[in-house]
Length: 372
Picture 1 (cartoon, helix red, strand yellow):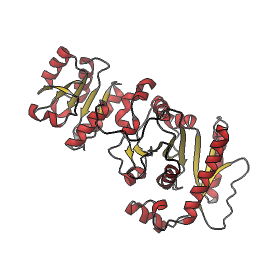
Picture 2: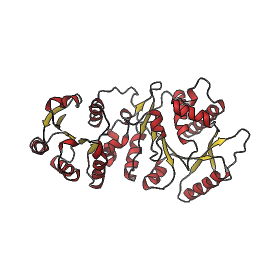
Picture 3: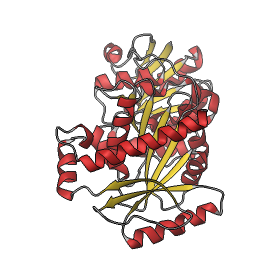
Picture 4: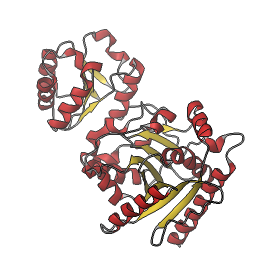
């Protein structure tokens, strides 16, 4: 791929660029504009430190200098990363990909390779074409969504080695899943330009961007926290359906009701509201579910923090997807602190594991009935 790179030291450019790039180096911003007009490369990599003018001037100019279909990868400085993202969004600059300012030299090279589809990492998951199931997991807070996303997909992946499973952290308020699995370098939001249309989104191999489980090659994790537009949600979910069998989305708090959240709710196959088993949480959940019923959306309840022998009836007309018992606060804190997955511990909390297995068996019977 013929790529123009704006970087101050020509002899070091190759250390940032993946294999497969034929590099043309410009050692000044003025030289970049001249060479870009002259050669019209297939891609551009711009190091923000090279531009003396404000980003709201040089970035739109760089975009207009190149063909609209030419991808631009920006390597920002720490102090201007957020401003560059804001300019891209407000100026509606298409085809501009922004790397994180905290990447090492090797991580920059890998990031550029993924964006330009030149990465050399093998895809060990195998091909998949079909229609995956999307599960949107929400709560009013502290009801066990993240704990479920840490544990349940592992059991599901073990029992279904032929299925491709993705777990997404989309909780912009509390990115616990990202911290637990160290997903900071696996952010789907860096590929937002691909989501402008569905065809482009489907061309991207999303599992190469995700973090693959070391023990379970069919299980993937990624961070997708961003202030998404509803159109981007639609295209992202549609493309993920084509590459995964199960997509579990930790959306987290169900307030405020943004356009993106509403689009996700209408797109998902199952909308699960995690509810603590205390009376106030249950009453609030019933009001929430009934309000969405009026809008044509079916919500199911995942009732959590059930004590032994506790009655878990939630009321007539409310569908209960599953029930999970209380796990002691000390056990949860220890698990999160040591990054220990409960279902993989030497002595796992048996009632919790049994409840997840029961959910899996019920899901299997429902899916089986649909297939038949």
